[in-house]
Length: 304
Image (tube, rainbow, N blue to C red; front, side, top):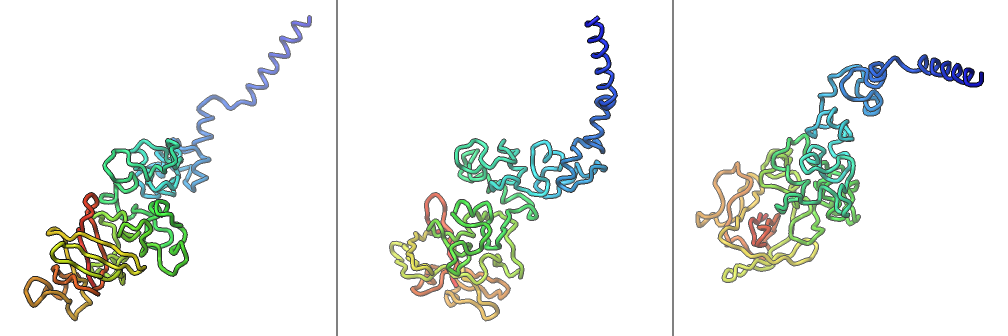
């Protein structure tokens, strides 16, 4: 008798459960993904997608190279091209096999963007500077011309244009004392995304900039000594490969060795004219220096 009562009770409980449960997996799937685009309704609602339209699964709102469905599968943020703020765009994380939502995937204390997976001397975050679309180029939240991805490497604040409060924007300083301004640290000669608002041939980040002045130049040893604006001394080796350019002041021509036919240009449309070692005179304004990374020899000098 007891066994019969228990059996009846179990049957009744099972029947109630069947009534309360949705009619099969198809109904459950429909409730979670109304438009059947592979993205759950809750995720679409969180990131302001349309859970009743499958079209947005193929969209790329943040223009990082991953569509919204790919972002969903990899736990990315479809509204942020660098979900984990490690300096590396989400699409590039796929290439380096790092997580979109974990800034230090291997837990070694180095952000994924600062690592060099292929060992070519270029950080993961800078690999794409010469080929990515300008709309997806590196964020610069505080407008100091130092990409957010580089601020952490230089010990700067990505939310403040003047991290140390000294009245000089971070981009115009040289945090690691390598003779390259912070804003120039990751510049690529093939970077198509350097902005030039007035189309004068000088990138916005370099407008009105002065690095320092020439303290001395020895023509025999080809050693150039420069005193920077903050009082430090930079010594550079000038070679036959060194490009010497003179920044024009506008339509009034430029200084240089024009009398000898080797310096300034007669083309008033050029903003930078060619100079020679004769222009490396004491007191001359130095606007910019670029070094060959391996030899530390001077690649280019721009004079004011």
